[in-house]
Amino acid sequence: MNERKIAIFDLDGTLVDAPLWLGILKHHLKEKGNLFSLFWFLISHMALAPFWKMGLIPTKKYYQSWGRDLSKTMKGIKVDKAKEIFNWITNEHLLPNLKKNVLARLKKHQEEDFLTILTSGNFQDLVEIIANRLNIDFAIGTELDYYPPTTLQESHPSNPKKVIPAYYTGKIIPPFCFGQGKAEKVKKFLSEKNLKINFKESFAYSDSFFDLPILEMAGNPVVVEPDKKLLEIAKNKGWQVI
View (cartoon, rainbow, N blue to C red):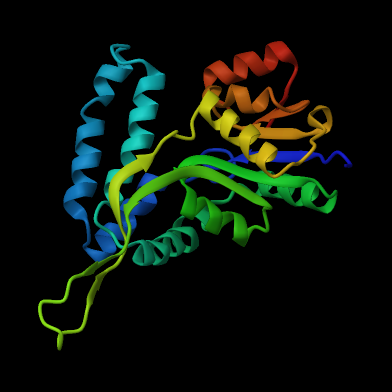
């Protein structure tokens, strides 16, 4: 089997300059739906921000909590309805905020026959929609937990059966696609696809120190508007900085 070269792109802060939570906020306010879950998520996590800034809460723990609990904003929403929401967020919030210089890198890799991967801590179904729009080969995100469709028992033979469609529980299906876990999910995915990868000639793009395991997978790591810790590492290792 011939080896393939891959180009891995993080989503938030790397390919797109707009956080998912803000897109969910815009949508839920517009539709006036799921506002209690949305505001409870925002208030509870923003209340922790001062403690994080003072160093009382580790950054990793704070980011993980924020990312994992974002699933609560989808609690009770039907899976079919969620597809409409994710398409709206993609069209109205994410795609208009693509970073043109990083998008140009993506297109160049596609022209050079790289396998492209979009990976994010965000919802798998949403990441797949964005990947499809940008002709990215694979999408790897965080799976949302849901209650499967159920059929209520007939109370009388003449009554039609009532089907309750699948809807989200407000939780994720572990593991959360973050940090080392994100790199492990990518490696597992490639293994399951039985793909032989030339990692030395592959590329990885991210803005976050917590994506260091992803960046170190590739022979050509590229940091995009990196946070302070990642910028320092990139300079020490001679990595390319956008």
